[in-house]
Image (cartoon, rainbow, N blue to C red; front, side, top):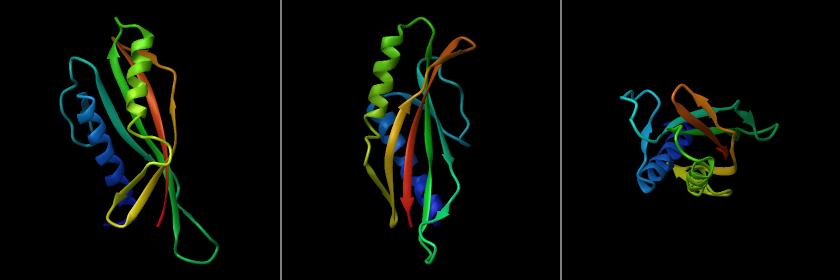
Length: 134
């Protein structure tokens, strides 16, 4: 496996732990499936450009975002959505180290973005920023 696929694997494994721990349905990239009737999350990995960590050497810095979009019904209170988003963020605490093969990926920050109505649902994006050196 490549370092980039190791980063992806580590992030997705943690997202699976989160979905299982919160008992929430998840839609994964390229896996397809029907949209759940109730609350669910959409998982998306947005890698950024890889850069050399130093002018000399083969070590690369990989960074990007794991975007988890919390999708819920419109008939709830914003405080409930904020609480649920906080529980999701709790699985991706700053400085959390995730490992796949020999690649270590570190969570550097997280941001709960403002929600918005999409059709008959409320969507709240949660951006988890990461960095990896390998």
